[in-house]
Every structure is written in structure tokens, then in C-alpha cells.
Length: 429
Image (tube, rainbow, N blue to C red):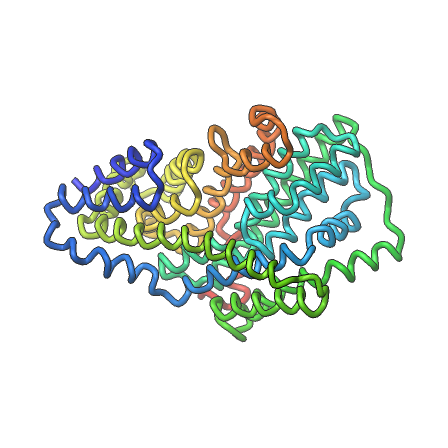
């Protein structure tokens, strides 16, 4: 009977009910269908316990740090640094687009924030240089996918808190996949630019390179401090998030001196709104996950997967990936992760996949959904930023979807791509 809760939840989401309410309604229906009405008084306690986690505290702080840094004017500095590093190559501004997203990923950890902050600059710059506007927009959307994969990452914090997995380990495991996706997109951009005759940029002078490096190093020190502090045991991920906020304030108030009281208020407002909505979903998801666990739905799914895959790791991971790719096309990444992680991660762990490995697979997979039609949240945001039709983006973004799916299957079946860095740093045995 518990398996019916998943299609019931999907039906509620399709009708347009907000995710948190859909989870709540599905849970109430579950209490009735499963004859667990006597346990309904546990809903508030279960909801609170889902949020009463030290690692979860890192989420609003990372969001606030990203909001503050965005308001200090770092976008131009990061783009200029990217131009210095890769702008002189064939299709240089396309490479700049990807590189700027990699830089911004270490600060915001959000794909949508990447598009909103860096997108207008990159799209206009590429359009003026002769790139097709829809191609520039597609590259912006595709490169933004790197945001939640390269640490620090909000969705990795959520997965780590939900599944009791080391957040530091998740951050370390996301480094190589993020770099592989960025390199894959740059290779695709090179061949497309060569075919279409997109221009090279000029090689920067030593003076220009030095200036952009000095200006860009300040914002890039934030992810270095965060990751270095976590991985060398100086502070926990939650403490690192607070340090990130302090560093962002220091940059805005002392170094750049362009952060106003109004900017701080707007940053607080944006961070609280976003983290509040995520926490409501996380709390409701905890109730739903508890109900599934009580009715042994993960065990039922494990039996189903075993009957299909026969306990074969390759086939099990293939089924999980296909399911996640489909779900990612239609559902918000945070909601999908909260709903599916407690169900699918144990299936992978059962066939010998490390919890960190399946966590990265889920994060990368669901991120691809951000640029996959028919929904593709980043595509809608990018089309609005670029002022072009949504359908114009779909054809241009397709090659980048293919390369990201290729990287997904590489990291799925070559565990070293995710496990090497955590093992190197001693974060896992």
C-alpha cells in the first residue's frame, strides 16, 4: 500500500500544488490509507526533527554569503579574470561563459543565481562579438549547472543532512565531476565555434593579466577558505558557512567598500526567503520519508529492483539514473532530492555503491534537469534574461545536455571520479 504514496504525491505535484503542501497532503493521505492515524500526533515532532540538524544550519549561511558577495560587484571581476585566462582561445567568450560559472559556483552554489548574476553580462558580451544570441543563452544555462556541483553546494548540504553523510566528503567528491562537466562544455564549444567561425579574443598583456588576477583573487578566496578550512579540520561545514558570511561582509565593507545597509538587508531578505522555502520542503519531506520507512517502502522497492536487476550494480545504477533524469525534467531539484534520496540511495548502497558516490550521482543527475525540456528551470530564467523565446534555446542547448549526460555516466561507472579526492584528503576510508 505504501508504494501508492509515490504516485499520489506525483499527482498532487502535477496539479500545481506547492511541493511542501503536496508532501503534507500526501502524508495525511498516507496516515489514513495505511491505518496509521493514531501516529498523526507525531507529525510536528517528525517535521521538527527533520530540521533539527547541525549541518542544516549551514544552508542559510551559505545562501547569505552568496547573496552578499553578489551585491559587492564581484561579477565583473570574475568575468574579467575568465577573459584573461581563456578569452584568447577560439570561441573564447564561450569558454569565458563556462569559466565564469565555475568561479561563481564556488561563491553562490546556485544555478539560478549564476544565470541571474552572470547571465546578462555574458549573453550581451557574446552577442556583440558575433555569437548567435540563442547560443550564448544556451551556454549560459548549461554552464550554470556547474553551480550546485562545485562546492560549496546547497543541495549537497541537504543530501548530507538527510542521509547522515559527511558534507565535507560531499564537497570534496563534487570537485572532479564539476571540472569534468566544465571541460566537456568547453570542448563542445570549441568545435561549434570552429564550425560557425566564432572569433578568438586577443591575448591579454602582462599588465592586464596582473590587474584581472589581483581583482579576481579576492572573491575566489572565499571557496578556498571554506574548502581548505573544512578539509583540513579547522572548522565544520556549518562553521565554514558562518565564516563565509563574515568574509563576504569583510570584502564588501572593508576591501571594496561598496556594500550598503540596504544591500545587507536585501541579502538577508533573499537568503531568508530561499532558505525558508527549502526548509519547509525539508520538514514536510521528513514526515513523508518517515511514513515510507514505517511502511517499509524502501525495502519493497529494493525487492522490485532486485527482481528487475538481479542485484546487478550496473543495471541498478542505470535504472536509478534513467528515473532521476525523467524526474529532473519535471520537478524542482531540491524537492526531488528530498523525496527520492531516502528511497533511491539505500537501493544503490545495497548493491555496493558508497553513500557519497550515489549522492553525487543524484546531485549531478537532477541538475541536468535544470536545462532539460519540457520544464528546465534554468532555461526559463535564461530565456527571460536573454529576452528570447524558450523554444530557441532548446536546439542550442541539446549538445551540452549530451555532454553532461556523458559525464554523468562516466562518474556513475568510474567511482574514482568522485571518490578520489575524499580518499586523498582522508575524509573516507
